[in-house]
Length: 383
Image (cartoon, rainbow, N blue to C red; front, side, top):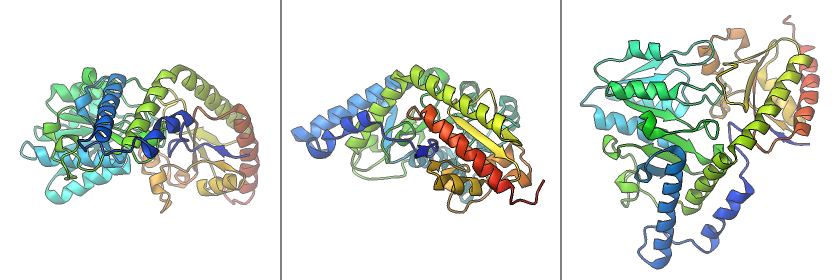
């Protein structure tokens, strides 16, 4: 049996999404920037997709920009906003547990004189508004806090932070990649200036992201080209991807209740069995304010990579944290920020479920995990 429990890294493409995309590969393949009939039909389709997405997130269609990924969207927003608004100030606040695409974009700006400060989180991995209130300055131009953390599933009080930023004349961005379908957004009502999404995190295709820009005038373009996307992001429109992300987002929210119920029940069942059958385990992050598909678990006295590899041999696919850190296997900065001790930082496994998982898969996973942990702990001298 193969069991995929790494859905925060990427998800299985929903077959219905694939079916919606297929015509735009083999018959409706016109360039949406072309003025002939085939091109203009795809341009109309793209506009319709923006309208549908806008309804789902409570925004305006003209504020939606399609990108190649959420990483590109985050780079576009962090760097573009900084460049456009540097005459107002060079102070930027981001949470200490942001995705690397946000952190590294912010770090890049330091060479151009920007001052980056990291907002600390509490032991649950939550950004507290009072901390932000104490850190803002007259030259603060941007606050960026992710909606849901990709490693520990913690949900942040985005509406409160966005409202506070708006009242203080500070632009606000949220990386919302892990939030669909767990959060019902209303970007206009909440006062969110910039938001990032990625299709492959909610059963859509790879290679297509969304940047929501409430005011396109407040950003300097990074990718110049043929004038696409209101001259904010050049490049030929990825019509199959645009259709795919739209269909995936619609399905995610249309089927939200049943999907979350199923995932929540399986996640709770997985956690109960682990607690009942394996000693010295604990949950990382908030037990209350987290998405129902995420379990980031500390298995004391074992290297997380050893657990991952042993489970992989058994056909079970999990993660030790962010997929972005897989190449160097460094300790998670997120787990460090919530207070894990040095000897526990590399002893964690992230299980992230999707609507496609089954109880049979969870049973196989726990049965295998019990054997893996018992065997690996028998090798360790740490008691």
